[in-house]
Length: 137
Image 1 (cartoon, rainbow, N blue to C red):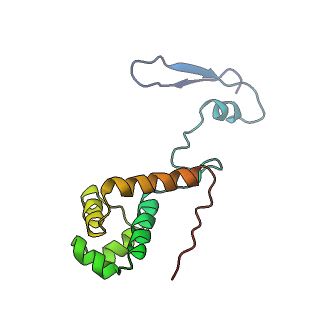
Image 2 (image 1 turned 135 degrees about the vertical axis):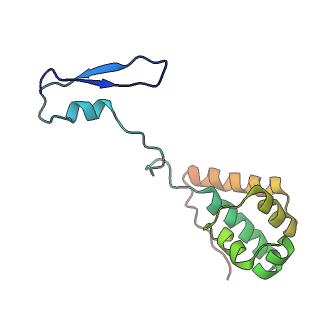
Image 3 (image 1 turned 30 degrees about the vertical axis):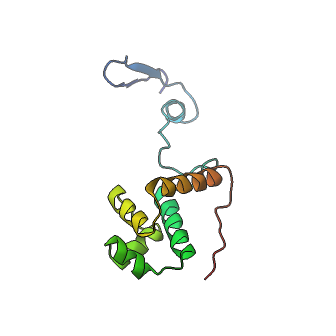
């Protein structure tokens, strides 16, 4: 397929580019090297798979444990179901900002403090911290 030309359409306002296929061992080898797909959403070795919902859930659970409170107690004070709060603490559900504020109020933990603790945990994990925490049962 020597001399075959592929046209790559660019977003409006940018010039289209032409790529000429050479007679390499594979018909698509040259084209694949030029047109790489983005890796958004893929886990890479340099960036572990971090989810904000996991970190926020850890912060809320750790604070609840530090206060010696039950899920039922905090769920009642925050006007949220026990099952939903449990899912949030385990990182299974995303939490809205309104609900995060309500749970924070129930724990007497300001929203800014929840976010600061979450940011610190994210920094630690991004810098190679194990993310493993020992917790009392």
